[in-house]
Image 1 (cartoon, rainbow, N blue to C red):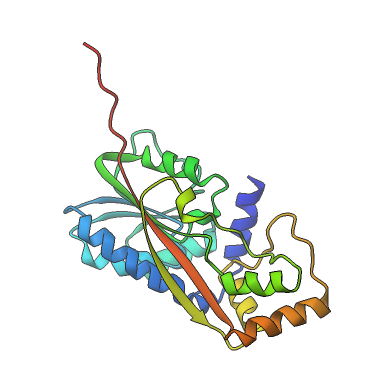
Image 2 (cartoon, rainbow, N blue to C red):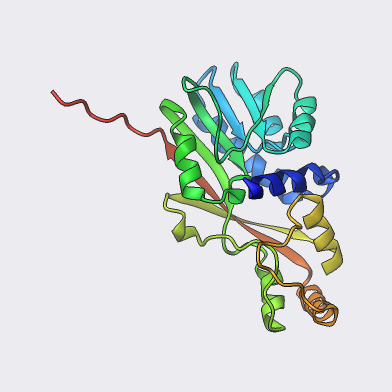
Length: 249
């Protein structure tokens, strides 16, 4: 639970999230189109990692009589999301370990760029899929290995490893996925790092050793020479509700 608490603190401190989360909004729009395409009337929807409400806002007005529950591990983010969408129910919750009533069942469980923070992605998604009603769908987007490739390349060229998270390759996810590439251009390496902190992703991963200032300046110059582009490789995972076990005669 220490990691969950650290993540919650990072996102609660991300007061400028909406200004810098350009790609996050684009990904939410992509996922919203998929949700709307498969949703039945009056769906019961659980949103995991709602943040400030990008996915809610892109989806909710396009559904017929949804019962939508917003959840987030960071109380301040959830409060901002709920304030943007009055009347929607909300709950502070660690999406990797949902603490919902046993009888809870949802037609749709959705999440945009949150599940990459799970300690064990496969186990977390299986737990969420277990909350689906028969015929339900779990639709999530998550970051994969190609994310921040230029930033990582600039570090490797100077003999260092970046402190930003390492995401799994698409083939390691274990489910059929659709992938898309997104880009966000920055004025400088410093601007890129400020944006990471603003969206709650600036905390170095565990075990990362600080890079000397001189080497960091060289890394920054390499990144800027390439255009200071933050590239995102995003996978959309679509998991159907588990089939109930067959009863023996």
